[in-house]
Image (cartoon, rainbow, N blue to C red; front, side, top):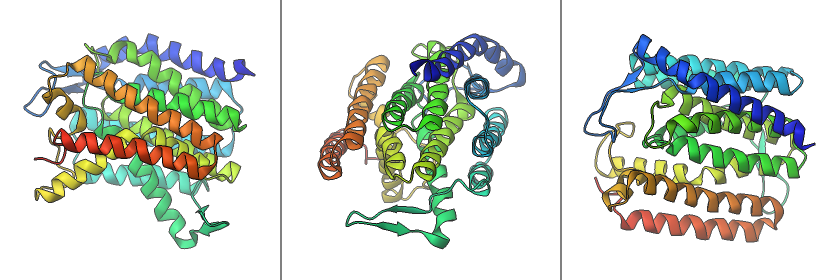
Length: 336
């Protein structure tokens, strides 16, 4: 059984590892580069577009590792749209409104293939049926995941490592609960990311760019919704959200910080958690590894949620998130 999931994982990792150097050359050739400025940590021109290697690796591994269905085709089609959007942004620096429109289109493809959130569990028993809110809620869910991963992509290896840890957690829970298609899809994603990290960890030689961060966020969102649709279990939605708890919390703080200081919510700044940790004197690698550690703790909480009584698991997650939030506030994450 392990070989069923190990094959797409290893294949994706191999393809991503082999392709990335060629994508790096392509990035320089077409002008998909990231120039340093006051907000960014890197000091030299860096190639972006690394996410293209992740995308190709995932596509090959999924096609080779599982039987293609209409649902899986829809997920891959939406992923292709989001990658096309990411490539365009990495080359041309698209306006925020154009990117948001493209994200809505990609999320809409999932809805068109009937992959949507139609209900959520009622803690008191039964379900809350979303009815007419199903489509907008699904689109909001997908767009949120896309941008959460995108916003944490600020240090070498940070978004890739956090996403890889989150993906491995989803695989573990999916295998335990018998979610075959979810496990295979996530195995391909995890393998592709890990193959890419070799070039992206500090000191990075290539960035994943919006091509990578948006694709990873999209696939994790699609997997969570797809799992919820096929298994009739809200846990499929909850586990990826908990695993990405750190970037979700960082995004929430960013929105609060910009709102309180009267700045546009989508305006980039240097107030993210990784910026604040660097300001305390931590090195680049120390900051990234520290955030890996927090993510790993949250992922353990996600696994416990899947295994334990929901109330006790929720208390564990609440304690972890509260501790992270208090720590973040103390290092000035709400300060402009």
